[in-house]
Length: 297
Image (cartoon, rainbow, N blue to C red; front, side, top):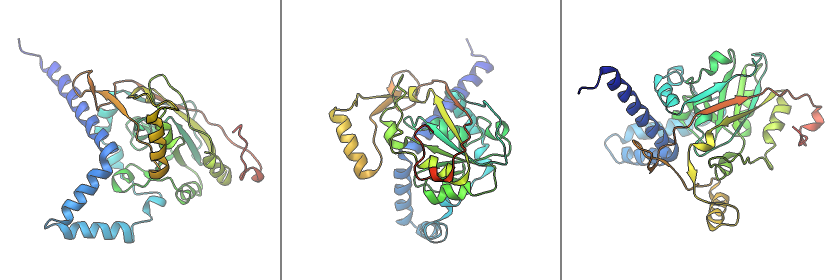
C-alpha cells in the first residue's frame, strides 16, 4: 500500500526538522571547535589567503563590532529554517504587555538550560514573531565572545561596553541577558527550577544607570529538553565541574537527550514545548541605588 502524498510530505518535514535541530545543536556545542578546525584547514590549503584576509579584517578592523551592536541580517533572522526548528519542540513567545518603543529595556532571562534554545529562537530569530509582538523594539541577545554567525541574528558581546552601547540609545532597544550563565546550566534538569542569582546584580545596575525598565523573562520547558547526570553539590562530578569552571569560565554539563529518529538516548533535545513569558517591571530608584541595588529588585 502506497503512502499518500500528504503523509510523505509530513514525514519529509519531520525529518527536515530533526536534521536542522541536529545541525543547530552541533553549532551550539561544537561551533567553536568546528570553526577552529575549518580555519586551520583553510590556512594550510591553497585558499589560505582568504583565511588570512578574514582573520585580519575580523581582528584588526572589525574587532569592536560585537561590542557595538553587532551586525544583524534580517534575512537570517526571518529564515524559514528557524520556523522548522521552532515547530520541533514547539517554542512560543507569550506577550503579557505591550512595550513602549520610546524606552529601553533589560530582559533578565532564565533559565540557561543546556543550550539556551528559548533565548536563541525568541530573540536571535523571528521564528516566534518578536518584532510583530513588540513593534519598534530591537532585541540584542547578549552572550560570550561571538563572531559573524551569531551576530547575524542580532547577538552581541555581554561585556559592560556592549550593554552600554545598546542602552544609551534614545529608546527601542532591549538587551537580553541570560543571568545565570554557564553556572546555571549545571542545574538544568527536568522538573528543576534552580536559578543562579547570587552576586549577579550587574544587569540591575546597568538598568538603573540608563533608566531602562527590567523585564524578568522565563522559558518554561527549557530545563526539560535534556536530562543530566547526577551532579548534586558534594558529588565528584560537581567537584570536577566547579574546578573546570573556575579555570575555563564555563561549566561542562554531562547531559543526554533523545536519539535522532527514536526515543533512545542521544544528542538531540526532547520534543518538549517551551513557553517563554515575561513581565514588565519598571524601576524608579534614586541614583544612589546604582552602586548597591536593593535585593528586592
